[in-house]
Image (cartoon, rainbow, N blue to C red; front, side, top):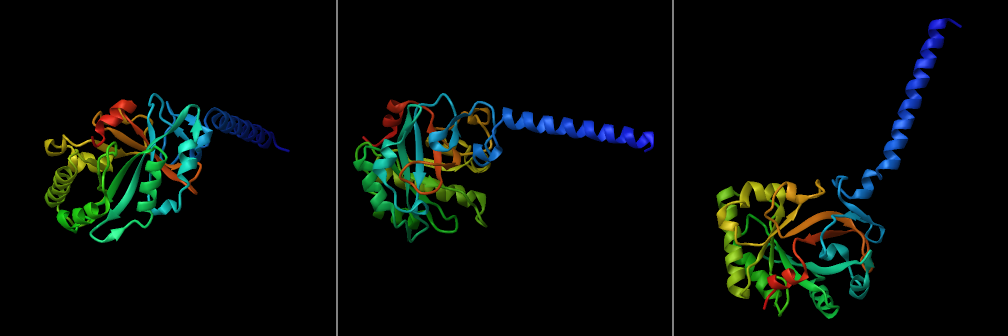
Length: 262
C-alpha cells in the first residue's frame, strides 16, 4: 500500500479520535440541551429532577401558570410536590380570552387552588383587534377576587395588524379598568421583546411586570424591570399531566403577599 495512503489513514484516524473525545467531553460536562427546557442556556441554572427542568438559583418563590391545556389538575398533588426544599407557592390561571372565550377549567382550578392554600391569580389573553372594554367586561364577569388573591393579569403576546399606538392605548385601558374594578394594581404579562418594543415607556411603569423569556439563565442581564419571570415551558409537577410553565418571583414570600388584594 502506498505510504501516502498510510499517512492519510493515520491522519483521518487521529481526527476521528479527537472528535469522539471532544463530543464525549461535552456530553459529560454539559447535560443534553433538551433537558434544559426550550431555549434555556447553561450557566447558573440548577437542576431539580423533581420538576424535570433546570431552575434559576437564588429565588425562593416559584410558581406555575395553567389553562385548559393542562386538563384536569389534582391540586392536592400540586400543593404537596416539593424538590430540594422548593415547592409551588403560586399559580396564575387562565380565565378567558378576547370578548367571549371562557376557559372551561377556570372555575374548578380557581376553587381548588384556593382550597389547597395556593396563592392564585387570574389572567386574560388579550386580542388586539378587539376593544379593551368588551374584553374586560368578559373578565370581570368571570373573576371575583378575594383577600390574598394575586392581582388580575393581562396577557399580551401579539399585535397582528393593530397599530402600535392603538395597541398601547387598548392595553392601558384594560389595565385602568382592572385597577378601578378590583382596587389593586394589575400585572402585565408579555415577552421580553414585546415589552422592549411596546411597554417600556413611563405609561406602563407602575404595573408589575411578568416577562416570558426562555433564552437566558438570568433575566437581570437583559432588564432589571420585572417582578415575575416565566423561564421555562417544560416543567413537570405531580397532579398535572404533561408540561407546565414555570415562573419565579423576584422577591420573597412576604413581598408576594404585599402585591395581593388586601
